[in-house]
Length: 342
Image (cartoon, rainbow, N blue to C red):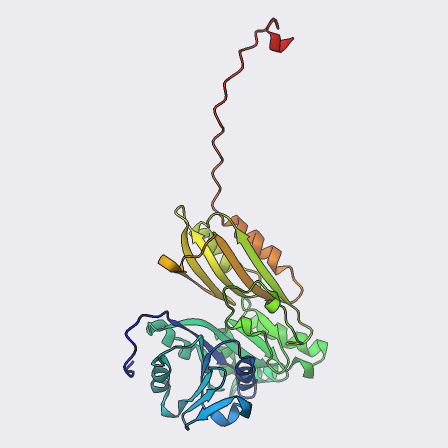
């Protein structure tokens, strides 16, 4: 990818999240929700500024191609082309906490996500796919668009079943069952107005406060549970990979520090839905302590306990302490005439 000149100082790859879903599902509403939160510096690549209903009070400048907000976020139009716009974002001197790309309503979000596999300045965080609870069943049956919707659903790391307030319990359950049948290992999150906790997209490493608990009704009759996992020791690498692949279905996000192998090599773990990565840490980046993970789960299921049980099984056994050498007592003979035997 050709790009403008970049600062020479090294920096970490920027996380990329792709937001997909069919026309009218609520992708732009989700983008607006994240931009309004103001907790992170997002760069958002969109097809049309007009669809992004940003509060006028947040707009710092607008030059036709880039919309800069007062909270440090920017929106970039794809009018110049996808690669050119992405290169311009990556060339920003300060970088961003997170890059969001809103895919076309008829596009395949996995095709966009593939750019993170070849671009060293990016790391794929997740593919979020927004689905209209009212329309998804009929869309999947429609011979004109059914294959497109199916590809979008099966590309997702997390499915957001949106507009659940417009459905009764039976209709919502039917829509959810359809998604779970098509993507059985993908978490399904019910939402209203595409409102989900921003931490699902990109939580920080120090999220032990109550921010993991939804402070407002972000979804329809859905609770969000905070997960905290802290242990001494280290994981056996293959056992940890197996545990992550078997994580509870309602686990939405997991992030933190782990240590692997007999040398307790420190890594950072990032997990969204079924997608996870582990990156070695070196030098000043190595945190104190041993294993510390934070996460968020949906629904009422005991995801924290189930996850803890899986992870505990992946821990390397702790060596037993060697007992101190004690002076043995004099042997006792069978006649019992030793003082200790009387």
